Length: 478
Image (cartoon, rainbow, N blue to C red; front, side):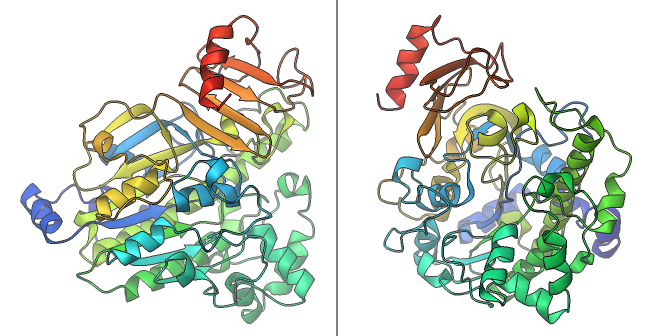
């Protein structure tokens, strides 16, 4: 089967690409690794919750590329983000620091230019560092430059095309009367800007979820697909014989639930489980929302296939470390909450898969933070650690030299913080509602969950377990 026929029939990549280069002979791998460090390919979608994958029993989510990567690498089942909102999460990853030290407390802040990034470390080490999509390192500025290159070299990229997020692109265009980022400028040049603005005017607030009608954009001009094309153009310009790091920051599966007509047709008729503890909308409405969310995930899987096919065509698949995770999850109506920003597992939990040279395939229940990819990339790239870095390299675990990684993972945003040891989870200063937690109220200071017995986090057991409260409180610094 050729690559061209596979592009149509199997999400864009050949069997060899789907296997992450695993068909190469060990001697070839050893030779390539000895000649130079591996390429680092990073798929980083926005708002992909940990359980929205084919690995959740009974969930009709069709992701053949992700499944194939998981079969050839390590699939982590307990990954938490350091902060469940876009800019802080990406700042934690760029700096390798926990939320309290990342320099970006909310989406209202830009990444401090004086604070170095792992991108810069890799560039200084000789990597060609590339990025596309929603980098989100200067979210508060509302000026990405219509070429998307306004600050990318300052952050450490060799070249990148930085785009606004879905709603940021709309807001900045309306406020300034013209496109302020590459994607909106592309739509203007294609004569699609007016239709896109008009469509988003019907997807504000809760309508961003409940409006599940198809959007007016053709497939090639849809955000995740167009951003992938930009990334592929960057990759084709990367010099061969020199290591590269490429980050695909997909805009989806972030709300609103805007999908193309083809995407809409692809999920028509599917059924999904209803949200936990929610009577907000009808069962049909919730199912439609989850259909569209699934369609966005599946489109990203297809785009990953395009990228892997290109890496294979360059002859570089055997010496490329591939990582997949997200900046945070999505509540999808659980506990009558939407988007992210809260300490529930659906918000702080994300999927993670890593595959590549030397990686020993398996499913791992090790506790990891998404920012551990920072130290991992630096480790494989032979670059020095960042100052103040709390990130820990996953390499010993990936290569089968260590069974565990962390004993506790942390997450936080604004005033709340949480610590999870894989079973018990302590949350401090979050205003739970009665619909979420029995006996909770707005003044709740500390809540303890046993996720083994109560995976949906509905019962506060803090009063009966002071030892676990005290133990985890110490990890939060008090």
